[in-house]
Image 1 (cartoon, one colour):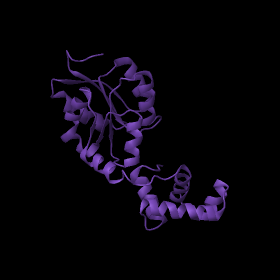
Image 2 (tube, one colour):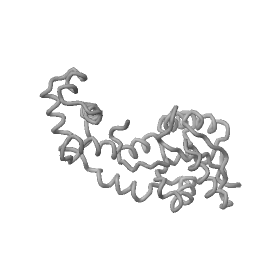
Image 3 (cartoon, rainbow, N blue to C red):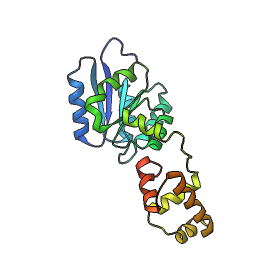
Image 4 (cartoon, rainbow, N blue to C red):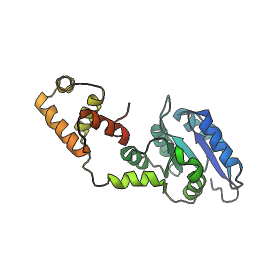
Length: 210
């Protein structure tokens, strides 16, 4: 599947047609790359990858039917050499790490598409990894943080859904004292002022998602 002899063949995956059009427009004016196919959700992405074997795939994360992370895991399960760049509006460090662990070679924010997309495609095609500046900053900022335990993540998710400690205890079949202890740990680890602030940080960093 080498594309040394021709342009870099790209698969663009995003549920917003305007984003795909934007990518097509950027790619069209560069002779060293071409848009091989498009997809609007993760399931379509897998089908299009099988059909076209693109050199580089641009993958949105939040999509209907099947999200980008699951699609990426499925594609790399079949095609370990797949070179995938995540395109998203989210810079949350936990979400970035999740994508990198799933095999993403690049991570770009949609607001920096025009500046960084073409160079990132070329870098990833050449076998390098590429993260946008803001994403790198987010990773560095939280690199030494204590991670929340799976139990604390469950509690944080229920806090974000508006549950009080008593309701959380009932739902998780644990004591209210245990919940209080976990909430204290969550506030401390996230450096949050209160429960609402903790929920906002959790969503922003991709620790929890709705």
